[in-house]
Image 1 (cartoon, rainbow, N blue to C red):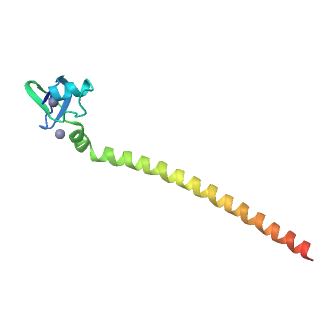
Image 2 (tube, rainbow, N blue to C red):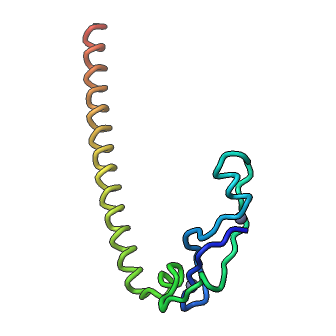
Image 3 (cartoon, rainbow, N blue to C red):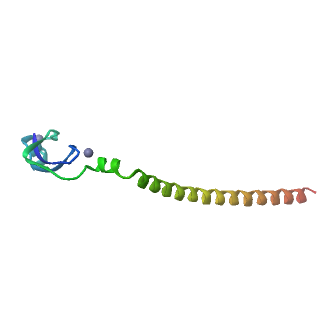
Length: 113
Ligand SMILES: [Zn+2]
Ligand SMILES: [Zn+2]
């Protein structure tokens, strides 16, 4: 078990901080003498500290819903505009292709006569 620093948020969620003390498993992995990476992380009370803020997830959740919606709307508007431009370009391209096609038909018709 490696001892990691741990940050405990106001919402009682926590996130792992940097490694404080690696265990033998991790040490031998770091020294490339073992292929096994240590997956057991352990927080020591001494290395856990509380912060007076919410974790990232909770912060996002509590973020004003209206703020999120307006951001989403802006994003969607941008996407719609981009899509419109793509479609316009595509339509314009198709029309050009069609007219070019008709010209060819006319030409071949002339040659056939
Ligand atoms: Zn370990
Ligand atoms: Zn949280």
